Image (cartoon, rainbow, N blue to C red; front, side, top):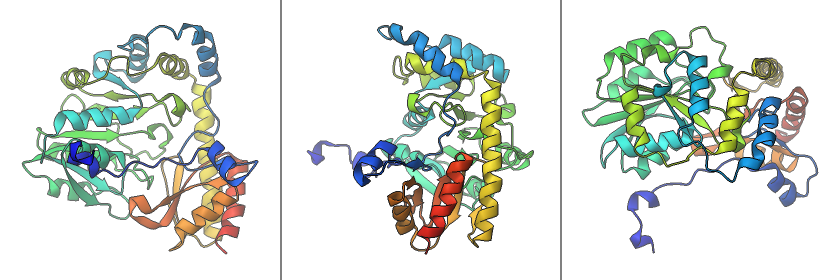
Length: 361
């Protein structure tokens, strides 16, 4: 059977998501489990989204709006852009896959900072493209080194901002200089899944570059909006690029409940404010306690923290798991001494600190 498969597929290591809460409860016989592994919003979705889903549930016998008309109109109004510049995806992951499929032929290059979101490399491999890995510098994406890595075969550049798993950002002056100096034949993908959590004033507003440069900005409803289980994200780019993406976008790729929930969530400013405050206070709490414990970490602009626990990070993850706390050890990201921990409610953060102290003994 393997001989029938595209060899590019066989070279792919499947993405391993964080363990679900119910699976851990069942496997380990635990009654209480806290999941801090997948950067989800512990407050849950907007009450408006839940209400909208309940009201719409009886209509799921009909296919979704294939073009996402009302959601794109709402995004257009909120972001001050034209709806023709928006494409919806079954999570922003789907748009990453579409971009790789469209812009890469065998042997053409995609530059990927390392470590960063694992799906970039997976989708490039599936598309037959060549991955050019550029190491981070002090846990930040190094735009100068990325520029130096560009060759005539470079077609795509992926920049997660904030970066996952480090939570660091590239700043607006760096981005402006970078975009002005690279060939126009390259599409730069700015993955801004954690955009709404950023507080640094030097964070770039990348949409400002959209008319002059070939960029694609990705955002999602999975994180601050709390709709990870519905899988809905979107891309913002030039109309010409949207047209090309639509040529490979599956029909009805975003389900009805996802569209309805996103539409209900988008203007719930109170929910967004609560979510930001939760992360802001959670960061302060965790920073303070990690410093008291003598544990190093990477200051973050996202809703997670990269924490150095030493050579036994895998064992620390396992000990925490058996004590009912799911975190993510970073061996797949070539950071074997680190765990990544999502910021939870204050109660969850306090429990994590207590159990981390025990797990490090």
